[in-house]
Length: 271
Image (cartoon, rainbow, N blue to C red; front, side):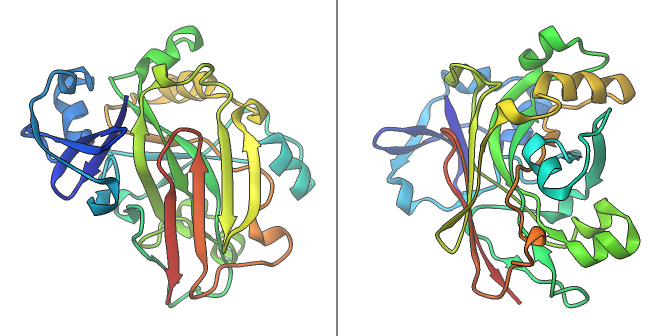
């Protein structure tokens, strides 16, 4: 199933557009917080139907409880930076106020406008409370899969050594456009990811190149802290980021992140 959070409420993506459901929750995060599952939406009555192009999308989970992000988690990205893959996941947290939706502009921060970079990533949304989860059961704790652009001010990252600060400016976590349930994938450990900047493919990979696949990340994080329904884990970015050759984002740049089966996540950059 493919769900969206819209300005009119929660919707289900169908061949002929979006079916907006007649439910009391404003977004998918609220459903998960109350039910720890999206199953309650399966038999929900329909409020109305609309063509996709007439619907204004919000982030599937507009205000996650936490956004966990993982550094250097593709072998290709480690190779392009000349670094060895880490022995344990490199974990940092992004503030949730940085989350925005598809088509919302990414703002170049006034204090650091010159080295802003894109990072297309596959993100997962946690569906139910997870503590000390074993890898074999990890996918059962996932509500769905979406796309993330882990935008980064590289000069802030370099000068402060603080990944969370460099990646938490307002609008620096575009998320969406839809949330796809795990059963829609033949192999959820092998999901395609492509990032285009101004129409040019900059990143093109699959999650089988992850150093720590999703089950390993869930197991690792849940040993250290309880993951809550609606939490987001952004699983890392592959080779092709702008910092490698100095191709940073500028006003008017358009970043288009495509995760297999997920609606496109497209954001224009502005100052």
